[in-house]
Image: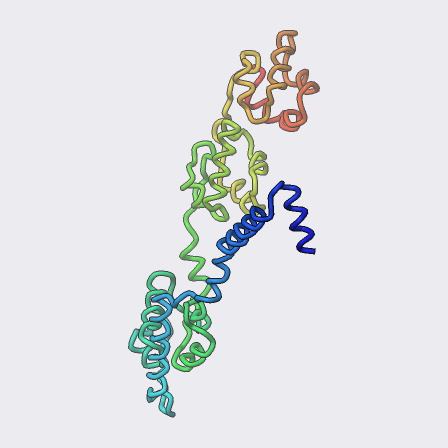
Amino acid sequence: MLRHFFHLGRVYFELDHRQAKAYLWLLFFTAAIVCSPLFTYYLYPAPYDVGDIQLILQEAEWKDSLAASPHNKSVALFHKRIDKMKEEDWIAAGLPEYLSKRILKYQSKVKPLKKINDLYAIYGMDSSRVAQVGPYLAEVKDSTPSKIIKKQSPSLIVLDINIADSIALEALPAIGPVLSRRILKYRDLLKGYASKKQYAEIYGISPEALAVLQKWTEIKEIPVVIIIKSADYQKLNAHFYLSGKDARFILSQLKLKATCWEELQPGLEAKAQEHIAELKLYYPCE
């Protein structure tokens, strides 16, 4: 069968016997070069990384020191709060020096340890090591909820929503950096809030945050853009509630002596009709 395919290839490419063999050898060597990384991976495995070698040596040193440690014998154990443990205390409990330093670095850079199970967040602490140091440790008791609430409850003031910045908004409960940016972005789209009902239109707002905004914000001045009879296309189309089609329709109806929003409402798109009450505040008739 191979000879049959070989013969068909020669006929198709119009090659003589010698040329066909040369192309086959060229194809074979090309495939060998392309696939060579697959073979070298199995024939020549990657050497250990320097960090891996150090970790292996430290592990062996720790096991030797643990075998010779007097704590493996039946002696009285000390009992100390986990957040008060020093480097020498961790070593005395049977941990190697490098792991003791890692625990202290975690407490200074990330957060203090309070529970014994918090040790699992540290790289290198497995169940056997946690069980080994557990008898030496005492957990930190949580503070009473009343003290926590007293510390975290700021003195709140009612904000003018149309001039408040992100820092003032983030000081309110249930409002974080992401939601405060969304509140300000939607305020820019509307050219200012005209009604507290518009808070519900903010993307991703939760019922808790909505209740906070309703209680701790106010609208001192309604941001009037312009009287409807004096508006031009740019002023109308710039508003979030109105489309370009709405702006053209309003201008055409004003030329036909339309008086106010009651006559304009039937010809507006659904979004504008839904917010007709707010549009009356942004573009009053008089």
